[in-house]
Image 1 (spheres, helix red, strand yellow):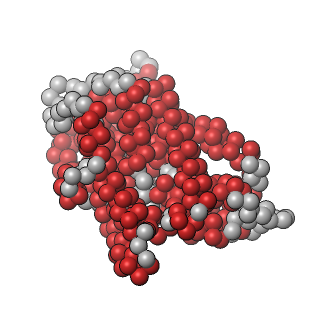
Image 2 (cartoon, helix red, strand yellow; image 1 turned 120 degrees about the horizontal axis):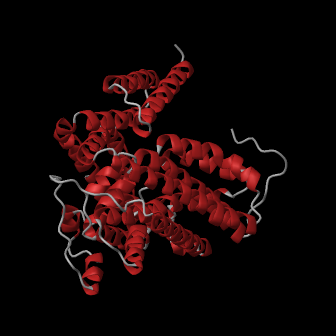
Image 3 (cartoon, helix red, strand yellow; image 1 turned 90 degrees about the vertical axis):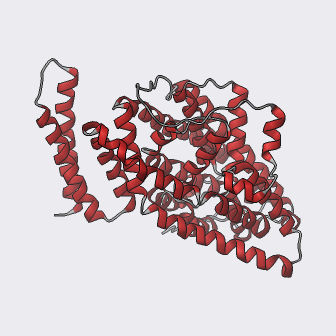
Length: 457
């Protein structure tokens, strides 16, 4: 049986299950509980068959979400025993944070963005990156405050998730916390921001050394980064178990109502990303007279790769090739794209600002506009350098929540749909960085639009 036919069977049984459940919940008719369960299980059975035929990690993660919901609904007590799987997954993910931040930031600064060598292109790129990511941050904050996706989640009695205590900090405590007292201590405690500050200063110092002095450390950092990417790929094979267990625990604890808020969060993210593309990136392209149609053709394949793999790193080679075909000089492409992967994470910044406020809303912790902006600016710093790692935004969100005294249980809920959100934000990261290469080339006066049709395949 072909995959296309299996998909039609899945859609058909899913439609049937949806109709039966709608009749049960929204009309006066009472249907057999066994009939409702059977309609779901048949649908999931076809989904399992599709996952086996597809052999895709993304498909298995999506399937695990479905299985997790089913376990949480039908076996809520048993679902709580699965929390160990989600905790194992989160612990494995947390081990990535320090080495990947250190390695990618050092390589990004010392290997690609030596401002003394690249001159105007360096400060223009950083200025553009920070301007666009700031706008992405504001779009995310406005969107989540409008939809209030996290508000109204009520913890049932007996909810035994351990929540960290929120300790009040003065402004001086917040500032001091940014600067590392001991790098190893920051790594041990999982303090993201001090790790970033140390890595940035280290990268600048390394860039100031002569080539023969900095090359060994730069090679080490590049090897460390590549190793951590492979390490992440290994961990991601455990992701279906961790994600499925996380959503099973969440639904078993909170019931199906939490999924309503999660869907609101998902739609808020997709809607705000569309607004960001149409309201920020498109006007930039039109103002600078970027050939929009050709640009769309050039980025369609890299964006598709990023969407499918949830990793911008996998889209980098094709993105660089297509930007050169679009008329951007190689020297600009080779500088702006890798640097943008460290400093220009539009989709990730928007998501993190939105998700962090969602966590506070779900926990019933009111945040002032000033606190939200401070949290957003912190997220802008801590998210640098992780574009190549699938679902690395989850790691950054965990670290920031702990730094601001927010509970972790809403993040465990977000974990259930993080795969779907990662697809969108990673795609926007790639599109934003591709546009940045054209913007800098235009700004430098070195962009030459290709004549006629261009083959981007």
